[in-house]
Image 1 (spheres, rainbow, N blue to C red):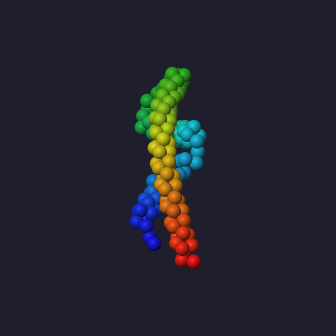
Image 2 (image 1 turned 90 degrees about the vertical axis):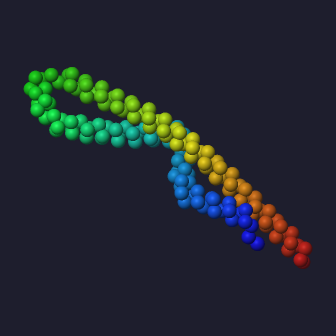
Image 3 (image 1 turned 45 degrees about the vertical axis):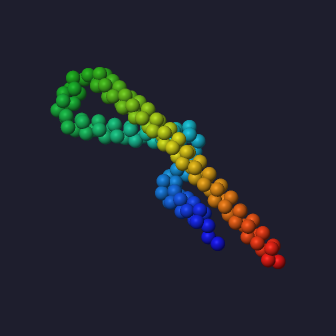
Length: 141
């Protein structure tokens, strides 16, 4: 016999697994520190590439001024400004990524805990039904 509560619970679990749960279960495979570290490593490479692309675009747009700076042979202040700008942007986005990854991990952990709680309830419902079915079969014999 089909139990309405069990069917509703199975539907909720399947909906979660096919939706946001697939991402949550991937996140939870790691510890919180590892997840944040991977996010920071990815941020480092992406921000470095983005900064280099933006710097190249800026140089191309302001080619005359850049050539004038190069003709003066004054490399140290220009390189210092580029490096300080890079470090500032990298630090800002690293703090942002670290904070967001910790929040994302915490939310995923809460949702996965609720998912596992519902799985335990579903398992209990199945066991109760098996016990009930086993008791009915014993009565019929």
